[in-house]
Image (tube, rainbow, N blue to C red; front, side, top):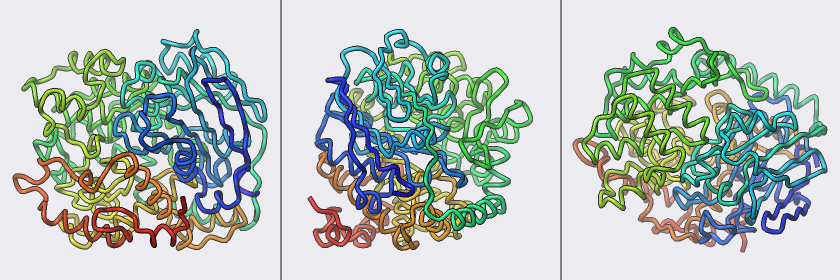
Amino acid sequence: MFGWSGRTIIVDLSSHSVTESRTGVKQAREYLGGRGFGIKLMHDFADPGVDPLSSDNPLVFATGPITGTMAPMSGHYSIITKSPLTHTIFDSNAGGHFGKAMKYAGIDALVITGSSDIPIYLSIFDEDVELISAEHLWGKDVRETTLALKDKGSVTCIGRAGEKKVRFANFVNDDLYSSGRGGHGAVAGSKNLKAIVVKGTNDPLIAEPRSFEKAITSAQRLLLANPVTSKGLSVYGTSFMINVMDHLDILPSLNFRERGFHHGDNISAEKLSATYKGKSMPCDNCPLGCIRLLENGSLLPDYDALWAFGPAVDNVDMESIIKANDLCYVNGVDPISCGATIASYLEMSGEKIDHARLLQTVSDVSQGISSLSEGSLSYMITQGAKELSMSSKGLEMPGYDPRDISGFALAYATSNRGACHMSAFMAGPELLGKPVVLDRFVLQGKAGFVKLLQDLAAVIDSIVLCPFVSFALGEGEIASLVSAATGVSYSSEDLLRVGERIWNLERLFNLRAGFTHEDDALPERMFSNGGISEEDLKKAISEYYQLRGWDNLGVPTTSKLEQLGIVF
């Protein structure tokens, strides 16, 4: 096959055995790779009711058909599992250089099952796959682990948070690039899996080189011509959104008790750029380079971390935000859930937090020695204050307020991951006017657009591209890249049908895990004091179900599954 390597590796940590299978042509064409392969393999290898921290919960790493090629922003891969934070299916689109290394080693997917009796790491060099003791690495942070292994290849690893099974622990790739949310690192910790190191020597095969080169040139021009990518992300990274949100008075603060912050200038991208000298560290084949590294080795915080350790906890001190973000990074923990959980605790306790206390709390949480390590929903349930968890399906809402960006209300409520802004980034059309301009104050009529962005995100996460390509590239440009790489002719409609197939299969997984339409909900706070109309949200959800071809309880109909070729 072109685009795909045709190789899936299955590692059973319980028996320390390695087997391989061929990636089916039908599976490749219908699920693309990445997130799509992940959900298909989760259905093949897991009972949806599995305990996320048991040895029976698989951990899947998957590349896409243009991973490792010269296509812009194609250096990503996906990690998929059942989340210990949300108990939903959960994928993470991860950047860096690890995805390219996987592809050069000829890997479409890596499925890790079971649990080792000792700490181990997995070493892959082309056809050779080896399980090696990681007892000397256990207890080390992300920087220390990467330094010890990087001579063997590209490294993705967990820190102390994953070892301690912090529910929102993550992987860190190539010493800089976090895998995002959902607790994939905790699943690795439960398996005694410290790291994966990959090195490969096989160039990906392209079906139509001239057409692929032409599609690459077109994509690069669009990325450089788009002001969001060329003047926002490439100059400041995602932190450019802080001033946008604050100037509109919609930067949520104090655990969403306030809908504005009014101190955005203190933590803005412009302030960061003027105060701190950061070096751009782009992911593989990325023309933007939105990640910045300080001279002391710390990462400059992105929008999410700036919000989580700034407005969410009522903090205007940039130095403490940078240090809190670095603690999350070095221990391998998600800053959004970390900061949001601390914010919910502060509201419950009535405390104000000083800079030293903030850093100590982040350290305790990220090392698993705080009860807040369970996440805001689980912790607040134990305190009899569930309503203070600003989450949906157990995933804490990020710093995009659905009361002021109304499309996020429907996107958060219906997301298969929980309150994830990347499942359908409605700030694009509702704030930035990309790819079209939508009225952010109106929820009515958004169901179709939310569905479109959800399906497109599933495609991007399966190819696997950086999610930010959606600001500049449409389905047509993406289809041209995939078609030329694979030799399989995909139209825009074909790709969106793949995205719809993936979304429905994820929905089925969650339903079989015990979720119902009642979980398509938001915190009660979103409906009070001039917030969202609960009735309008219910109507939007009902319209969304109809557009999805689901029944009135949010269950995919038999005819819809047959139409998508999903058969059990």
